[in-house]
Length: 170
Image 1 (tube, helix red, strand yellow):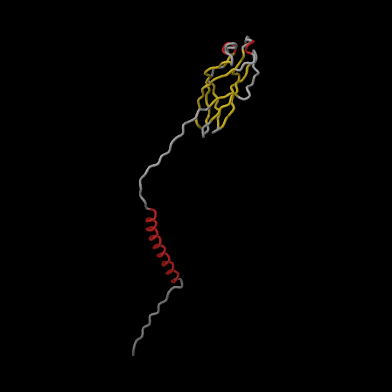
Image 2 (image 1 turned 120 degrees about the horizontal axis):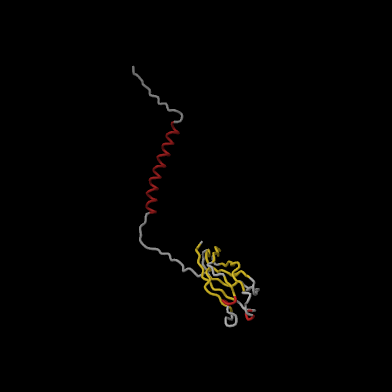
C-alpha cells in the first residue's frame, strides 16, 4: 500500500494584491534609481566665465520757477516762493533740504535785490518726494518780503533765487 501525501497550499485572499504592491514598489524604486542617474547625466555641466553689472550716474535734481511766475509783490507784501523740482533719475528722490545760495533782480543796477527785499536764508527743510522721471511742486512760506522803502525802479522786476539741495533715494 502506498501512502499518499498531498500538500495543499492555501493563500489568504489578499496575497495576490500584496505581491502586486511589492512588484509595483520594486519597479518604482528601480525607475527612480535609473532616472536619477539619467538626470544627473543631463544636468551635470562645468564651465568658467564672468559677468558684470554697472551703475548709472545719478542726474542732478533741478529747481526751476513755477510757471507762470507770480508777479504780485509790492512794498510790505510777504510772499511764498514757489518752484518746481525735476528728477530725471529712474528712481524716486526725497529732497530733504534746500539752501539759498544767491538772489538777484533782473536789473540789479536799478533795483538791487539785497537792498529791496527781506529774504529768509534757510536752510529750509522740505521732505518732498519727487518720483522717478517726474516733477513735483514745492514752496517755502513767507520766503520773500518787499521792503516798505523799495525803490520805484523795482516795479515790474523779476527776482531770481538760486539754491542747492540735498536729498536721498527713496
